[in-house]
Structures are given as C-alpha cells and as structure tokens.
Amino acid sequence: MTDGGLKVEQPMESVEALSREAEGLKVKLEEERQKLNDVPLTTVAARLENLQQLNIKPRRVLKGHQGKVLCSDWCNDKRHLVSSSQDGKMIIWDAFTTNKEHAVTMPTTWVMACAYSPTGSMVACGGLDNKVTVYPLSFDEDVTQKKKAVGTHTSYMSCCTFPYSDQQILTGSGDSTCALWDVESGMMLQSFHGHQGDVMALDLAPSETGNTFVSGGCDKMALIWDMRTGQCVQNFEGHESDINTVKFYPSGDAIATGSDDATCRLFDLRADREIAVYTKESIIFGVNSVDFSVSGRLLFAGYNDYTVNVWDTLKCHRLTILYGHENRVSCLKMSPDGTSISTGSWDFTLRIWA
Amino acid sequence: MSSHQQLRVLVEQLQREANIDRMKTSEAINHLKRYISEHEAEDYLLVGFTSQKANPFREKSSCTVL
Image (cartoon, rainbow over all chains, first blue to last red; front, side, top):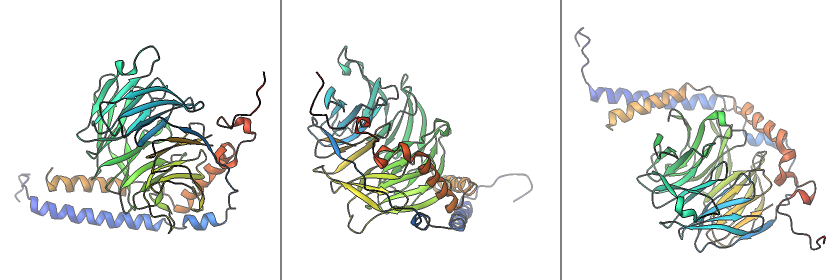
C-alpha cells in the first residue's frame, strides 16, 4: 500500500484476520471465566442445613378455557390473573373467588403471550397473529371495543411484558428478535438483534434502574440486553436444547433458565458463568416455565411430564413435586407478594398453590 | 449482512464481553446466599404462614359469623 492513506479493500484477508481475532477472544473469555471459578455452588451449599418440609397445597382450580392454557400473568393487586389459550381466548380471573371477570376472543388461535400492565388497567396479548394487542379493562363496555394493535413482528409473538410502566411493551418473537414498543403511538422504540433462533421467553431485571432484561430462545442461548442502547451485554450458553423460559433471581444478580434438555440452570451475571444445573436422572421431560420464591431459595419449574418440581436453589436438590395437572405445565408465576404460585396447563386449567 | 460484516459485529461483541468485570464464583455465590438470608423471613412458600389467616388462599372456615 502507498502512503496516500488510501484504504484498499481486502475482504478476504480481513475475514481471515477477523476470524482469528474472534477465535482468540473466545479462548481468552473462557480462560478468564475459568480463572475465577474457584468454588462450585454444591461445595458452598453443602455446609447449609437442609430445608424443612414445605407445606404448599393446591388451593384453587380455575376452569373456563376450552383449549391449552399457554400463558398467564398476575395483576399487581395480587388477586387477578390474566391467562391466554390455544383456542384464542383470553380470560381475566378473580383468583380468590375463581370468577371470570372478562373473557375476550382474539382474532387468532394460539395466544402464546399475555401480560398485565403495572397499574392493572390493561392487558396485552398476542401469538400466532404476530401482533401484540392491548385491551384496556373496563366493566362499562365490551373490552374488545377499545383494543389497540401496538406492534407487529414478522413471525409469532412468544412473550411480552410491560417494562415498569403502562406506556411501553417489550415483546419477543419467532422472528428471533425482541422489540420495545410505545403503547400510545405503536412506534418501535428499540429492537434487539442477536439470537440465532426463535425467542421463546424474556424477563425484566427486578430493579427499575437496571434497565436490562434477559431473553432465551431456540439457539440455546440466554442473552442479557441493555434496553436503552439495544446492545447485548452478556450471553450465556450451556443448555443442550431450546430454552423455553428465563427468570431473574430476585436480587437481579443471576438468571434461571429452563430447557427442552430437561434441565434448569442458574447463571450468575457477575461471575459471568453457569453456577448450577438442576437435574435428575429420572427427569427426562422438558421445562416450560420457571420462577423463584421471593427470597430466591426455591426454584419452581413446570415440566412436560405434568409436574411442577420445586428445587432448593442452593443445594440443587429437588425438595418436592406438585401434582395435580393432567397435561403439560406450560406456565407458572409467583404472585407479586410471594404468597402463592399460579400454574397453567395443557389440561385447560389454571391452579393456585399456597 | 455479508459474512465480513457479521464477523465484525461478532468481534465487537466479544471485545465488549472480554472487557466486563468479573467476580470470583465463591463471592458471587455468597451474594446470592446473603440475599436469601435477608429475605427468607418474608418468603411464605418457604417458611409458611405465621397464621393461616395470613394466607389469602386458605381454605374457607366452615363456620361463619352471622
């Protein structure tokens, strides 16, 4: 090259150099992580006393869906639940009385995602229609009258949540992206590119100041995102099959994942690595949904074998099994105050345990 | 995106990841443990309810006050 500062495109060489650099960085990253991996969780937890017998019982059965229940979410009032199902229905429940307060028919089947807004004044849902639609809740008129399509993906919408306010919705999709939408204008505020497969689940960091969320998908990866910049700030691999569910540890310092590989895993954000695998030889079915108790000590996981397994997060033992559902447990959610847990199933019912 | 661009994005991503601060696993685990010990008293599913009245989903008592 001459000294003219002229840049000559040498794509072949650059590709090689970049590949080399990427490989070098990957090796360096793994070395760094390994260097700090001083004590495994099982060693630390071995010194802890075993937990006492849990006393969690089935308390309510919510019947009304005529198809597989695919998703559910608690209202912040700790009393109402929204659920969505394969037959295209979305139902608002009073979980105390088991009454249905609203039943909405969507213009699509497989409503895979639903979410309550923080104020409880609206719900969002969507699925095979590729759309996220918002329904303001009111007893004065038909809920469908005021529905509003907010965002559209190029494939099915698998998950959605309101990040801390009623004004925005975060969605994940089979088009392998996540997106943040403005509810009022329907504008896409940010999109998140990085997954190499369908996005199946997302969860917000527990602290508002964090402005991060985690997503998991069919590329077996869990990615941590900065909501403002749209950048992926961390990624975690380890699962051997699709990740179906992701959930932040209540302190925000770790994430739990559940996968078709029949395991749940715990990844610590600050150690930047996997620190636990929740597995047993007898458990061979996939995990669809996970959630923590308020302290983080219990990890609840819903499986394709119709059960909910309760794990000791630290000791990695299974503490108990919640039996009751007669088909796959598709969704599971801790109530906002941690007094109960709701589960939804392909047996068309939801159940409340406390 | 061309493979060249894709690689550049990947390298930038890896560089960002290489620059993050990491904690020893033992230290990170101690943080998780501390959070549990600070919050287990209010973890009803873990420690149970102090009285069944505190459980919003308790079985209804068979007698009612008229």
